[in-house]
Length: 288
Image 1: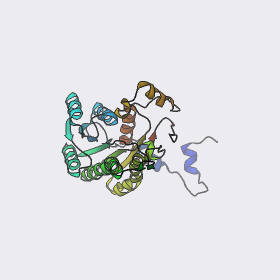
Image 2 (image 1 turned 45 degrees about the horizontal axis):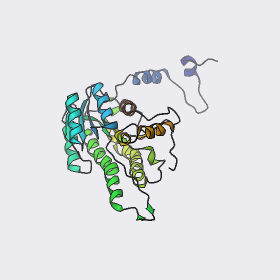
Image 3 (image 1 turned 90 degrees about the vertical axis):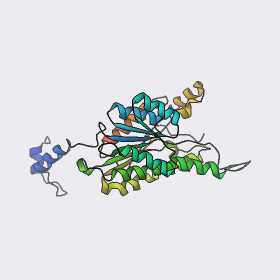
Image 4 (image 1 turned 60 degrees about the vertical axis):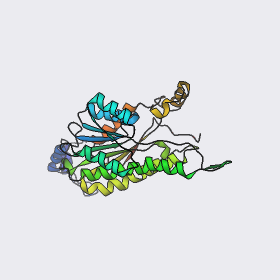
């Protein structure tokens, strides 16, 4: 028998569940509810002067957001802000006073801060131990401090700034998008510090989302694979092509704009919460 609303309202399933017309009407109305809208919303992109962050700034700006660029690289940040007519704030994510000031600057916009994207991060390659000795502690601490503690600094100050916001549909007040890496799952030889830092970003995603659920603030993370960012720009073209060829499909490096499109979707999709999304073309990194 073909399924229809009429038959559904008369059918009681083994679970004892009956679909009623009023519930269906409410469901249809809920599909028209307004999420956090990018257009007109205040946003901050930390690490927004280049790479994935720059692409996110451009994507948010193109969609009508009021974007604040925060980055440790003042030269690139000022240049991008000048090009797009946006605000730039110098910010080292390890320094909580600087992060707090950047967030407060972004939150001063009408309607309060609604969107926070953190792309700040860096890498380091060294084995945990070798014939020349153990991994030095300082670079490990530095990578964890920038990639993990820096992300946490942005998350805690941005989410706090969102709490006073007027709630939108479903009581939503804002959304935070963090950046991990597939190295959180597929750490290669020499990536002990980087994998630890990005694994931490993945690990805080769900508890942060649960912590902030009562305020209507969502937290999600994107874990990119191999992307054409300044980190890989220094490699010879042949090496870059070889890296891209190792991706199952599409066989190329990811484009920062593809990260930015996903980040914008995360912002607008209310059911995405507490989740880490791999964006890697089905790549699973080998040991080396």
